[in-house]
Length: 200
Image (cartoon, rainbow, N blue to C red; front, side):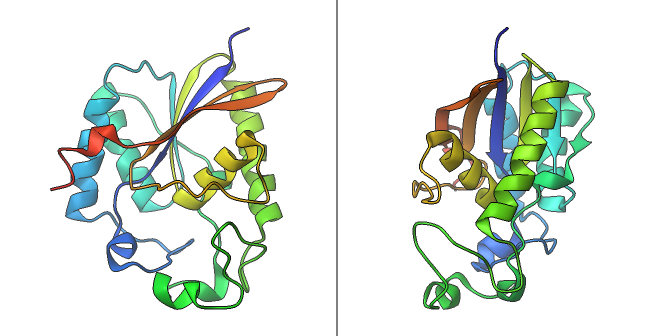
């Protein structure tokens, strides 16, 4: 049986991304640049035959997914277990402010104050992966998700947790993970070649 191939894509630029603040579970709509990135992403993935498209309930994820789904006349399945990390008390705080605090680690995190721990995020994300693999066995699944959860999953399949891979991950970066009943492997990590026209 061939593996289930997951294309994990971070959503287009949101207002919080533009303003360099942590949004976590708070909804933050796409910017004009984020919408342009979503179109560039749809163009770049035009030749990939997806069997299923998945997003999270947050509009920055769902709206990015809809750009691709409408072209293909496909539905978007909402999977709540893949929603972004709950950053608790840090919601709305700037990246620069948080990076100076004692609970920040550049190579990962233990728990966000009032939010989720690494173990909690990994548990729910793997629960979603197992279910999607079971339901779409051997198929190709597009997941429009979030930077934090995608980095945790990629780091898990790279076998480096609790350390997180520190490679740059821009909006609409593409990570490909092949999953079978024994585990999974990362085939592409945070690819961004398709963004050349959307960076302007």
